[in-house]
Image (cartoon, rainbow, N blue to C red; front, side, top):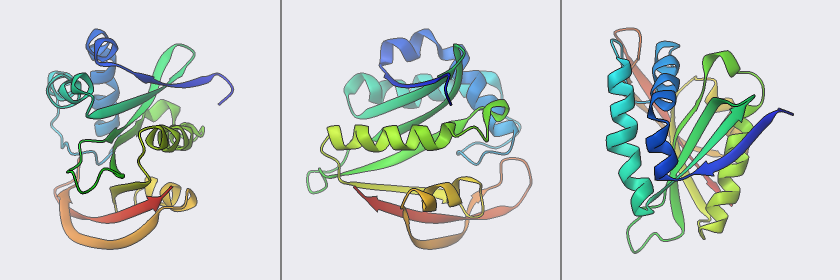
Length: 175
């Protein structure tokens, strides 16, 4: 982690680096990450996700995105969705935590989540919610960071590489 930098980015930077973000998402999905996509999944679809789903929220101030860079290379990212209803101004949803398969097991996901929690507090968000595929490597990470399991929903999502339905675990953390 000594050479890893965690920082937020704006919509302009995301737009300028769509190819790198598309490659990160493409590689993560093809390594089995359950982050809403299933194979076959193309680089074009990966770039489209960032352009169509993430960029508008960043530009509108409804989403915050953090990135991890190691040796000048995009190593990972995470987002919080702060576009909440009027009766939930204290809450945000954690989305799209991913670390490039070549960069895993170096503490990058943990560093991204710690930075995300600091960012959430700066946006006056004291409750974070998320879901993760039950049994994924991220689940014990979230537990170790103090996230509490609320429950599990069976058959929630299609596995990205295998034709089966996987459960999801719903979690929260009060900051």
